[in-house]
Length: 500
Image (cartoon, rainbow, N blue to C red; front, side, top):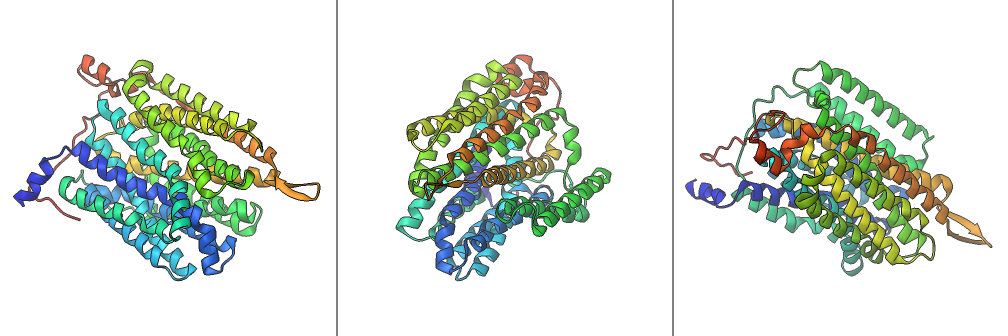
């Protein structure tokens, strides 16, 4: 026992939690884009239609949405380390099982299991990260978050195209296994076990309403562009999902210990940051999906070439995150920094509407790099301030709400922009030939830019005085946080370190 404690004490918890969280989130986020590349090949291998094979992605997204609500309570009840390690193990095992699937039914079942683990990764890991970093160091934590959330979506198509072409579609799942094993081993030795204040009873009603509501809504918005928004199945699931979420809101506001902490939206800073992230997720993740279609369907590029052309976005985000965390945030303050970043992202996406059939690919790559650079200026300060005035005991459930909104924003972005593309027509007939209709892509990029501009009203509601203690230089000069949130602390039980 003493040996394990010594091993844990050899490394800072800021480093230990960051390493495990980045590895876990990298797997979870990359999984969506890397699997999308392999779907056509999987469909041919299992001899199923393109519509049927889409269930592989939808099953994962729905399962993810269902289990996100429970993650905050589980982390508080059993300790962040236990739950995070269990989620990584479940995700890793499910990934290995997906690679061995012999039918579409098996693969969908294993993807649902993946979603159970994936739904707990982000909220629990983020809560642990922000409990480990005090408010004045949240900018550093936010720059860490940019690694998995931006590198993974861009790397997925590149790695997916390479694995499917050179090896087999099964390797898009197997690639998670070594990452998951390494994260579990590292986390078991170096991450401290911690338990927050008593979370109260498990809110069964809230979980069922939130899980079913989010799951149905996620299914509806995912299937809408494919089946048609007027189809009975899509309308029924969206209406029923929305109704369940309304019932969940009424139930949770009356509950003294809700599983979804909606009352956290009364926190001005958290509400403003959540609004920004929701609109940014719609625009950013929707644009990444459409630009892939532009490269592959519009320009006829291979998945690998498309992925390589998209990759400058990840480079831009990582460079932008360093620029934001090291220089700009402390000079601009939260409100101006987020607003300027949103304008930069919106303009970059808007300029993509000028691209056509013969536009230089370097123009597209430059715009993607600039979009990523702007993303860093939004993501870093928004993440830094999101939980700045949330107490440690509320961080887990606030993280659950935050990640549910982010996940829903991504699904809305992809479905909204896909719908615009379908309504205008991704192809048209010219001289008897079916060719790409680049007008549809132009309009779609403009819609994404408008959605990004929609985050600016939320950014303008940020009060710099509320976020002042997240700026290191100001914190040091003031000596005490301005708005007096409860100091961030981690309750550590080093006497009985617990492996997952």
